Image 1 (cartoon, rainbow, N blue to C red):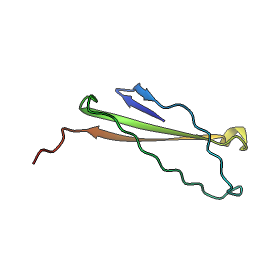
Image 2 (image 1 turned 135 degrees about the horizontal axis):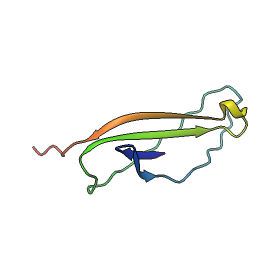
Image 3 (image 1 turned 90 degrees about the vertical axis):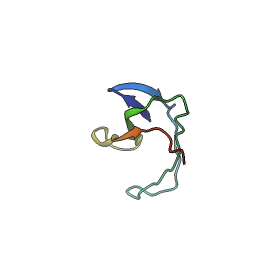
Length: 77
């Protein structure tokens, strides 16, 4: 998982191995959280998640999904 700003990494999480009892072809769900912290600059970012399958053919061994998000000022009532 990598957080990018202006196309440059600002945070890269260590790679984590996920073990599952799923049979080949069955979907696997993984859920997590990311806390950016109060020092994070306001603005536009991208979150890239890459998943690798050690048992897949080389052409299908990994996939990356990227989504954009914006850090905005906190709402103060």
